[in-house]
Amino acid sequence: MDIQHILTRLPHRYPFLLVDRVLEVEEGVRIKALKNVTINEPFFGGHFPGRPVMPGVLMLEALAQAAALLAFKSMAEGLGENTVYYFVGIDGARFKRPVVPGDQLVLEAELTRAKSRIYKFRARATVDGELAVEAELMCTMRAAP
Image 1 (tube, helix red, strand yellow):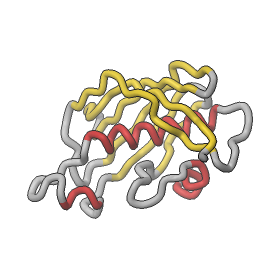
Image 2 (cartoon, rainbow, N blue to C red; image 1 turned 120 degrees about the horizontal axis):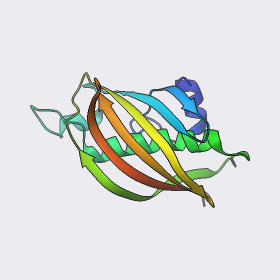
Image 3 (tube, rainbow, N blue to C red; image 1 turned 90 degrees about the horizontal axis):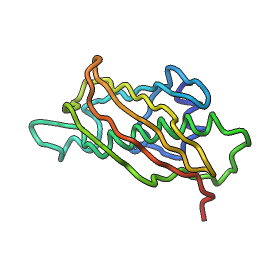
Image 4 (cartoon, rainbow, N blue to C red; image 1 turned 30 degrees about the vertical axis):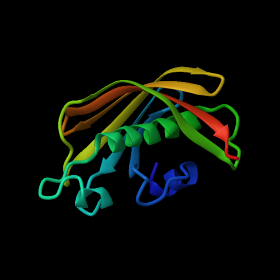
């Protein structure tokens, strides 16, 4: 799935779109996607000057966006034009290494439960095979007001 297809599924746009490409997707099971981390990211100017580090909350957001793509791909019925994907919970988030400009964040999410448009995922992101962050994510889909 290239960026053009991602843009048709996610409402996020620059600077908040955090998935650049989907490498693999197994409907209803798992997804593997990429986020290329560049020095041009707007948050690096202040986080941290002289030692840029990607904020952990944005790594979790990137995982949630990848998980949303899996959920949308896995749904039996079509999405409404105003469908929005929201966080419901984050459990067990652990940050294992800093993510810096030049890194390629490999985002992986596995669907562990889906019921009444509530989705639970086991998610992790790696850089060069080294774990950067892991968490359990819960998300839901709702019609935008």
